[in-house]
Image (cartoon, rainbow, N blue to C red):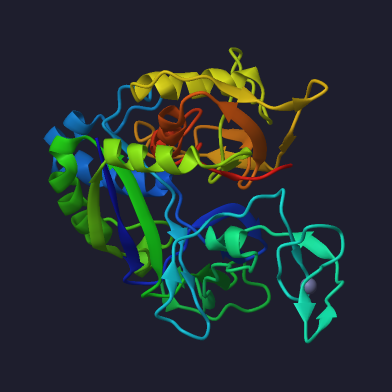
Length: 370
Ligand SMILES: [Zn+2]
């Protein structure tokens, strides 16, 4: 298989609903879930190239060994405030880390030991949500992705045209938060070799003629794809396995929501044997042998968990929300051991848990302790 990466750039404003609506205000997400991209491509192919739709098995919802394409969440990029030529990809910030509230330094203890103008900073720290560069962790200086957002107020359209409703009028103006045009996200997908070029073409067409997210009838959600690169998955795995072998205390971090359910379809919010079973499935799917062990302290697994919600993926069901599933959220951490670094690297490529083809269960490994 091939890893296809690049930049997804907004051509018009983009609104990715969070599912939470406060009054007449619709909030947008700061990233584009893989399921939205999969939905965009799936729809476009279903009506315009059914043959490729079938060949890619893009509508597979349950057996991740059967699909020909995995879409990852498109995360915002970090752009340096002082020098906008410094642009870096980001990952979900690990919840195990604390950052100084004042100088944004990575904390070692409860007080910031960073030296500013010859004095210790001494401020307290806090957990960070959102997306940060991997360099933040090694240099201990926070580099956070910040996505510009705008809010536009729209008036409902009624038969007689636009209206400014009076107090007694049931249709009130609504407020759409969106990400402006020309915002770049980091795009990534895994696809079978023979379909890479077809998929590239499809992405460009679907981004213009289909689009992403909400309010598309109002001109929102057009995207384009640039800077596309192809790397064989085997090369990605070999390179990464080599890097992972240099790390002494391995910690796994979830880079997207992860869906783990037991045999009664009950969500498991945390890392235990159910997670390990799913990891073994990914090892098998990627053709690797491996054992992943969760580290514990007197039988308590060393983990930090956030809660998330997964929703809406089935292309078969018109990409509507068939159910809402509680799941492991962004930035959850667990300390691990493993006997095969190639197998671990394969987890970074293919993900763990259910619906990894929609971006769920994306993970990365780093040096770290809980
Ligand atoms: Zn500080």
